[in-house]
Image (cartoon, rainbow, N blue to C red; front, side, top):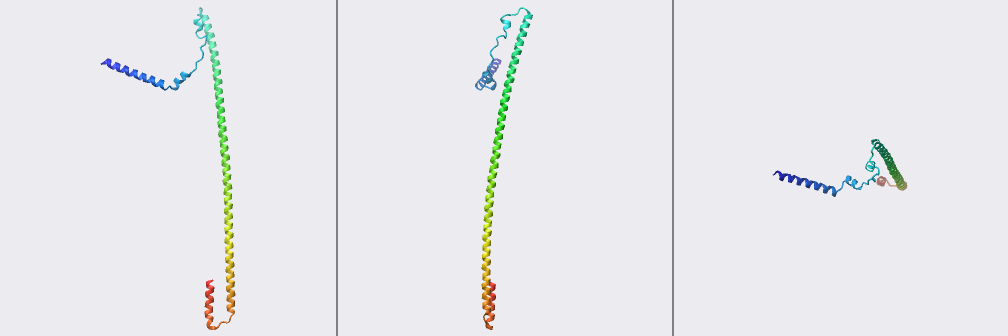
Length: 195
């Protein structure tokens, strides 16, 4: 029974490992991808050569060779650091140039937006001015028409009044008999009230 459990456990672990290997090979992560695409430097000739090719017999000679190797290694590291610093500085300058270009593009776009906005505001102001002038001209025309209409009515009223006064004067100048006097007065009153 114990052996069955062990076989089962081993089979389960094997299937998990197999599944894990499939999942990592089918979908490479960034780290795996980096490991596959990384370019390594060429191996240096002096690493390990001081011992394997010509082993030193004297410990002082070995220390001297090791010191030389360390000094050469330190020089190479210093050189690599300089290169790295230069590359980082170039990348920083490139990024700074890109940022400045982006800021300049944004500034130009904002200036263009402001210019277009100002032009649109000018056009709207001009349209408002034209509409206001048209409205003012329409009002002046209507007022002139109303004034002319009022003057004509006043003139007609004055003419009617003159005609009625003239008619009344002519009628009053006629000799009216006493029985007709009351009828004529009533007619005159009715005519003046009708006006």
